[in-house]
Length: 143
Image (tube, rainbow, N blue to C red; front, side, top):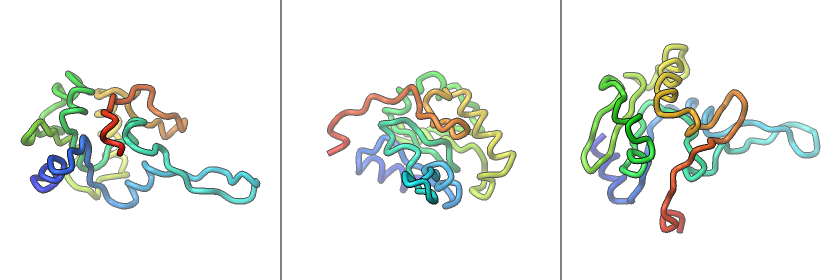
């Protein structure tokens, strides 16, 4: 956790997460019909966090920008899911082990936390809709 927080500070990154590969892929990409009608193509659910968040993973590190974005919703998360790290970085961890990702219990915890943080901030995987509320990011972060 301290290494991720140090990298976030060094790179001035507002967000980082750690996840198992299958969980990461299921939230960041999806298959769509090919334009010619034959087969499918893989595409991203969201290009980057300027379009919102793709979901919750095993460990979600939110920097000050996202702490402000979520505001009281993040601050009021139960302590079992949240840990304040240094320099305004907040760790949100829906479950203890990364292997709990994709399990019914793990998915229920993710839904519970997303409901509190604001479902409008996250990609809707069921209906394939982008978030309607996104953070305001400084233009300098995309150069």
